[in-house]
Length: 389
Image (cartoon, rainbow, N blue to C red):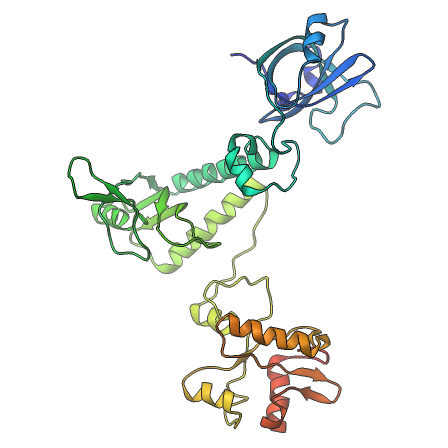
């Protein structure tokens, strides 16, 4: 092995040990003839001290080091002097007194900072992806992903599941998106399709008697990019035999709790379960972000006998009339409200009706089309308060 320890693993109890470290120069500082290097690897940072008395040749080489040089350092771990501890680093109580240094590769000035969280244009990050992946938060993301995958595997293994890999090149099957096709060299004019999911394979496993299967698998779908749509993605695929809906829900919830506890040290509360109808009724979508609030209020009963054409038309055609309450939204100006109406139309709505709760009652462009009872019912059904919209 070229190194005896990782940079970020050194602690006070290593004091006096001779170590060999490999990594990248994170930064360099010169103070009174002594050179300090922050050496970085995946485990973290450690301060390396180059002084003329400890190793003259190493000190000379240290003068040439620049950010992102890849080097090997041999030296002795020593406790830092009192008052020079760095509480922000796990290695902040010690430093390495360098005796020798070897430069594996030099580096030009990076196109963006490696040692921070500065925003960098995405195209530049992808062009220099090997540099982007050196940044701490990127490596933290990969470590987190690694921990999650390991925790998932341990959970399903403990519950009697078998992990089975399924083919990546198969025949096209009708699913929700277009397929990516791979031409066949052996059979000219024919092709394989990359799987959109392992659905048929896992059903085959169930028929074969492999009653508990899972796989962390790549899937491919030729569709337009959106926040929750990627052409290539990784999913946890699970299938079980001889179970009911509640069994699947219970085990999945248990899995999430186990992963969160192991990887993040977080104890999740019991999950709130919503039926499809309840989700659509309260939020208007089948995958709501329940943290958002502003749930829909059902106004069908309040407006059952309304003569207001816009509401009457919706109800007569089997639709529904709902509203959301904007807390303190009554402060919005008429110009701002008109802007919301236009935005709603741009998003595909036929329009937007607003009503503000004022000390004098409900104020709305629809006032003249609503009865006193309907106006009172709107406020009551929505639980709106004075100042709300």
